[in-house]
Length: 321
Image (cartoon, rainbow, N blue to C red; front, top):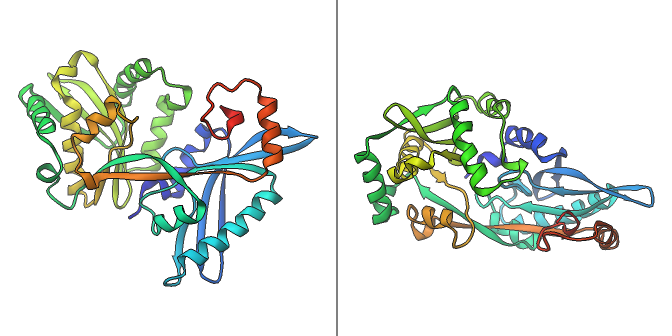
């Protein structure tokens, strides 16, 4: 199953936000082909030598098997790993971080060979089945009914004409969670989403008495609806508009022939996670994994020492924490 995160246009769109250089690395071996897109960033100088680290961009990333001879996936990934380690050495890359795409072909093999560790969950619905009956619990169904009873309706915007209203509502999200610049957007950035993903990027707008009270930006790949960024008016929280938007956006994805809706992740035991769990069955909680590799331990340790006080001791690479 293909996510939008595997698309070159998604990676290119994220490049500016990531403050680095988008690099595409391709490995072709006897067993098959592996592609890997990542962001290359300057880590700093040691003895007048520039060093770098690499990471996945917004969403998920990591190596992806493009094609492989039957039964040779493990051998292919081992060959890729050896080749890529040499690439990192030759290009002064000292650290690598990537959130692996759980929907990629052979995702389990990729995670195993790369020594990936558990990183979190995505909350998803299978749009090929009756997800309302099979996945939604009583709480989510009551919330949807409450929104309908409050005369909340849903309108979709595939042209981006409601970008100003989305930004107004999204500012409430920014203020509530005190997010960094990475999670903030300008009108120009959102316009790029609609240009790059014309016809598959859209706002789901919850409307009450002619006013948009909640708005969500989604992007569709050929298989998956990615429910990405949400803004809402807290004065209408009692209307349960996000519950109705979740349902109606899922129905839209089903009408467009998509197989899955990805509602993103959420902090463990946090309110966002608890909300999303109301809409998914047990098999809709999809684990995903991340790789954290040090390719040059000596230089890495020196970078950590140079960084001084570390604010976030669990961040990787540590010298950026």
